[in-house]
Length: 123
Image (cartoon, rainbow, N blue to C red; front, top):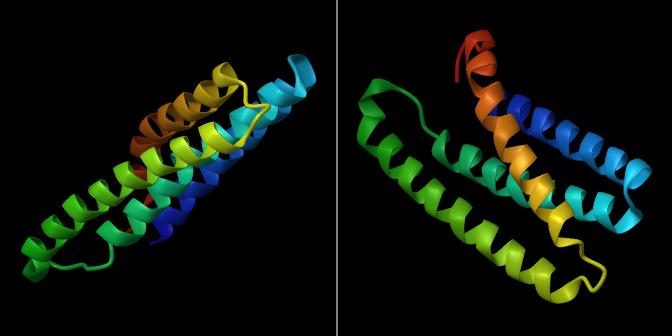
């Protein structure tokens, strides 16, 4: 579970930094939309991590595999619901900022995962 928390911290930091830069250099709606996009990426990833890594041990391999598939489904559904909710309820939403925050947070996950796994003692 430490790995999940570490990755969430990194993703949240990137989302907040991107939002701050967006507000400072572009506009308030862009920056806030980038923050929302980052959270739309990070929160479902947290749900996946908590669900998928609930069980450990070689004896639980089948259960771990099932948890990964269920966690991935939960992540996809949560992401879709979050996009629909935000898109329909935030009138000042900046689409470029939303997708910039979402994509940067996903890219951060992909780039930080090998580094984070290399430092992790256990999952």
